[in-house]
Length: 73
Image 1 (cartoon, rainbow, N blue to C red):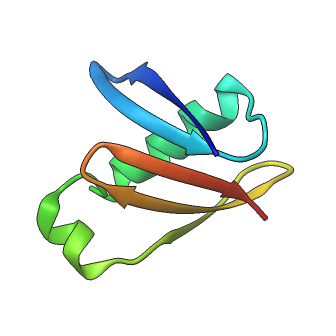
Image 2: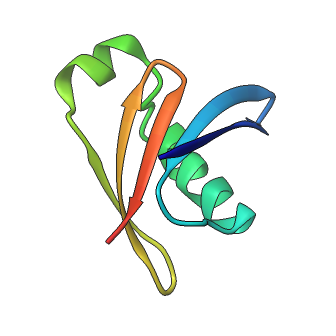
């Protein structure tokens, strides 16, 4: 599994992934997570993962603090 730091919406996230992802996919996933307040500690305690559908791909995503693991499904 690889990881990269990723600056988005004035925040730095650590993105973990197995397959290559387009920057547009990473930005879209992060936007959805921000909409769902996924980086709030209380929300993280109550959710195990997120299913995010984009135009031609679906992802299962796990969030822990500012660490985001993205897996294409």
